[in-house]
Amino acid sequence: MVNNPSRRRMIDFELTEEQRLIRDTARDFADNEIAPRARENDRNHRFDTELVRKLAGIGFLGSMLSEEYGGRGIDYRTYGLIVEEVGRADSSARTVVSVTTSLVGSAIDRWGTEKQRRKWIPGLCSGEALGCFALTEPDTGSDAANLKTRAEKIEGGWRLSGQKQWISLGSHAAFALTFAQTDPDKGHRGLAAFLVPTDSEGFSSSQIHGKLGLHASDTAELSLDGVEVGEEALLGDVGDGFKVAMTALDSGRFSVAAGAVGVCQGCVNASVAYAKQRRQFGRPIAAFQLVQAMIADMVVDADAARSLVWKAGWLKDTGRPNTLETSVAKLFATEASIRSANTAIQVHGGSGYVDDYPVERYLRDARVTTLYEGTSEIQKLIIGRAVTGVNAMT
Image (tube, rainbow, N blue to C red; front, side, top):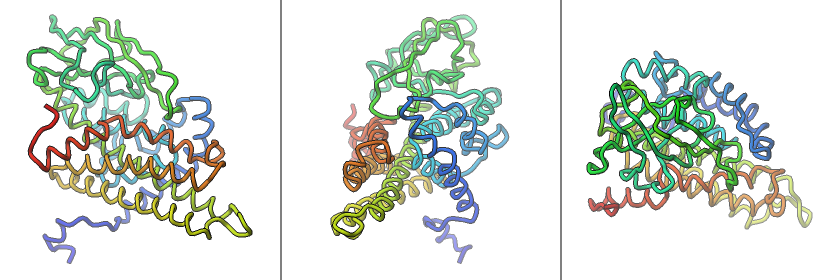
């Protein structure tokens, strides 16, 4: 049965022994190392560098990256299990994993030269040299082909000028995977990607304050004022920038979706625990039909979102096209995480409105997942284009 070729083409929802071990390790780490810090980090808007080192030490920052450069070389589905558990404990910590592994690391692993991989990936895996994904600009979000950041060819390299906004890890990164336009007349075919050290002359960053959620995650605005880099900074070829960005976003969307599943599951766990200990009218509120109905809604959302994430991961692992399925997973899981968090607060009543319980943080942190790595509306357009063959984005 195991050797039946037709069976190998089917999604197997049974975890392997190795996957169970990795999931359980991630769950223990999330419960013992991440969750106890989450409330205070959130309250103090603290980017927890010690936690980053712990995430690196257990191998989570290089989980999918090649072993020869310090990664663990695991598959997407197993990576999704890790991200779900980290996201269940704290979305700010999940952001560190997603950016480091899915957006920056995977792009260098796929598009980089041997020299670039050996220079940058080990630092990502060890947490000693974090990277950030510098695509979004003040006036350019979903329309990545119309970047205002310019890359001018100079002798021996390039000169970059422009602004980037909403960049996760931007204040703590040792380098920025920066996307710039080399020739505006070429549109997306003129885009290029560069690996830019953040200590370069003309490079600066400033933290963005006043966010609704992800208080323990670093978000920054970047400025490149005539930053000069050598030819070795170019990732891929001139004109590959759009493809680099889109493949990285495909990986990033998977990671965000897996983290959103963690939020859904966290809402279930918190609500079940609270409903069993909270008593009203002489019995636990878990005995009330409407409370059970709310919990049931969250369970359905968590299970459906997890199945979609696993399907997308399976397609990635088997080398099949997966842009559609990744967008479906990202759209459903992130919207489900908001529904679940909102419902979990309702189960908790007034207690859910303060940070004595994690559900109010779940709601604040989940909201942004429907915005970055492509808004929910962009995911719908990607899905619509795939099923109709008509591109509504141009």
